[in-house]
Image 1 (cartoon, rainbow, N blue to C red):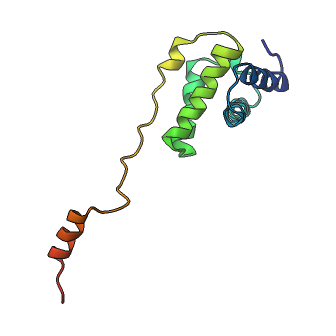
Image 2: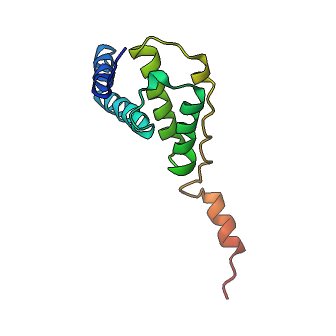
Length: 124
């Protein structure tokens, strides 16, 4: 197990390269692990329990108002840290709820929708 902040980040980088993940995936994983550790004032995540991890993810969703995909990326980075770097399986980490994506608003109208809008318009 890594015993210091920089050793922890180097361990994440090493494991990302070993798993042959894309460079962008590796950078994102390191970013979220670093953000998580700094959020708890450099307390190493090996000492974290469900409450701390959930509080961090709630902070991202509620205070930082990140997109659900960003929230998922942070959760994936923490899962990667525990499972792949430290070889620790934490079933409770998979049970953490994720925010639901917002309903997508159509970017363009169909021909029928344009007709309906034009039909209802008043020329005055």
